[in-house]
Image (tube, rainbow, N blue to C red; front, side, top):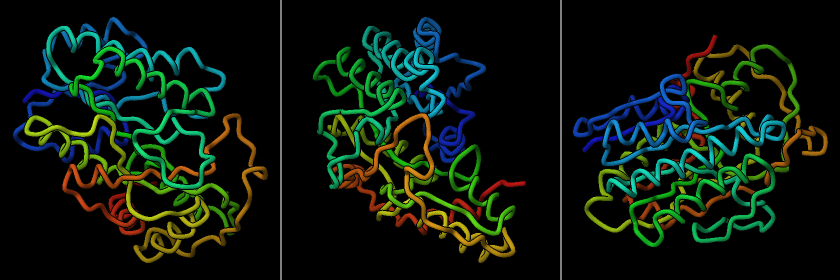
Length: 294
């Protein structure tokens, strides 16, 4: 089975490369090799490589910067998935689209179900929601497109909360971290396994059209920051953890509004993939054990 992977240079892309099953033939592309803001380049890549699947792990993920670059965010997160879908619909391939908890507004206070209506808050969430809607429009009710939403992604490479906090624990004695946003971290190591598992079994049985995958449990960013300090010290990555102080979202204003509640219900996805998942603290430890930090 031939897979065209986008975003191979990103944190999820690198985890996917490391975990690739031997049975798959992989064509991996970075942003330098495939400009996702160029819809025609996306269609051309599908025509050139004729993949069985496009695994679209590439995205515009700068949540705050998207507020000042809405056209670019929508081109990458909305236009590219639509272009892939259009070409795959013509030639018969399938699409796995990685998406985000930001398609929801975070106001309901209970885990979001895969089938719930999208209600994004800012440009980033709106651009990812537009990509979901576009590919569903292209394929209609056909199960040739699968959407896999995730949340609070962390990994041992790239730019993410875990590596930033690890650095700050080294540099500072005290940190203020938002405590009134609730969600669950997702390790790229586990997310990559879920992606590959999806492709492995999607040819054998019907899969849910929209799936949710994150690690197990719930936390605030404050809790995660404290755990990073504790685990980092246990692993010898830092000498003494900084003291982490809880602050509110209003204490740390950002250009883009974040959902205050980002938990995703992963029950149906875990059942479909036959994967139990891992508690976020165990997953965080595995990430930090592999972390490539200065």
